[in-house]
Length: 207
Image (cartoon, rainbow, N blue to C red; front, side, top):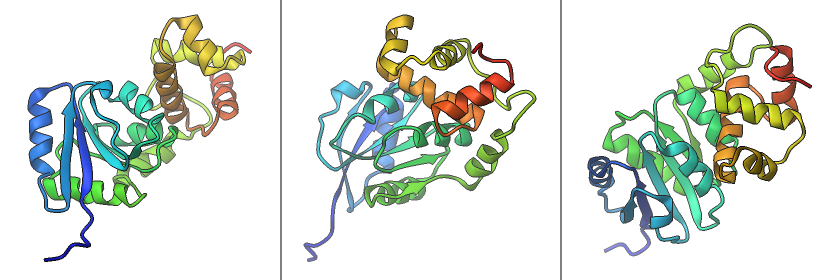
């Protein structure tokens, strides 16, 4: 018997009980152990070196919250709009991450978890193709900003920190962090200065 095989600790995060059960079943493998499943980030034990597999509509704020967890080895997200999701995760301080389509096979999911556990980033090819197309200098955005994102963007243009934006809008700092990442993705920006500059050219903010 081999004793050098590393078993990856995996947790499942999804608001739907059926999705949690389905993802846990897909992760069944000799190389992986599901050590928790929950609907809320706070209900997952902070096990060092774990990979969190996440799906469902609640991922944006959950991803931002997990980015602050030093015990996390990485995050695997199942989501539509791969380019936007990849750009949003790229803007977070995650050690490693992956984006997969919701219809990913068990083999694809397990391969992504193994890659993330090794510190790699995994995205579908179309994510970068579409992501590069977002980096335009004028005209309409491929995916428009939401009303809340425009509010956050305006406050960024005024020089407010995430903490002050959260206070002004009465939302959590994790939510602000997600909105900022989403804004970067939609504007094709890699930092606040670029985001404000691109937005100003489009007349999205007042300087």
